[in-house]
Image (cartoon, protein in one colour):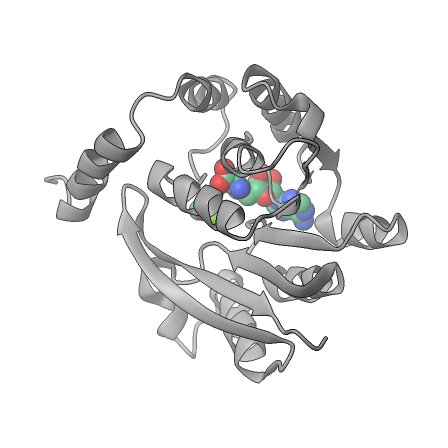
Length: 224
Ligand code: SAH
Ligand code: DHB
Ligand code: MG
């Protein structure tokens, strides 16, 4: 099949606006080498996350779903000196590859990768008073996304920005009768976003080298 136009446009824009990035390229190569699936955010999406975190002035970032640390590197690079990123990953092999990639990017001191199921690690972060986080990126298993979002609000302050990946998934989000747990998870997320007075949110559909998908972007209200 011919390259879809949006993949060609992504390639053009990434070359123009991001260019060669040895640490990110090395991270992708090491991830492929280790047999990790190529399901991380695209370069343009990674840069969007980076810019959003910088626009937010984030000093503390939480990520749920590390994989090989590709989005982790983009986000950690947005931190000021002494800023910190905590990333949660259930698969010890993914975490090991991510730690190596983060080290290669020179970000070890800023990044704390924790291994375990996010639903167990999130309450631990709360117990350790690691929050509030300024920016939270949710990108782990999709069925639990609404639970991660709830925990994220608990680790937030007024004004915290929460971004959720893979909300649209080729348009499957509109299928109200879907039996796919991923779709059900994302529809539950959208219901929550629409009904929860603690957040203001939108969902932005995206196309590019990773196909057709979308990010939810939420801001925690000033009066939580
Ligand atoms: N954010 C990454 C991609 C993450 S892919 C990037 O864009 O580069 C999703 C990751 O979530 C996988 O590594 C998977 O192992 C992890 N994951 C799946 N279920 C999880 C759970 N219950 N707790 C924590 N991480 C989980
Ligand atoms: C999958 C997970 C992701 O976070 C993603 O961006 C794409 C695909 C997956 O589990 O298939
Ligand atoms: Mg994702």
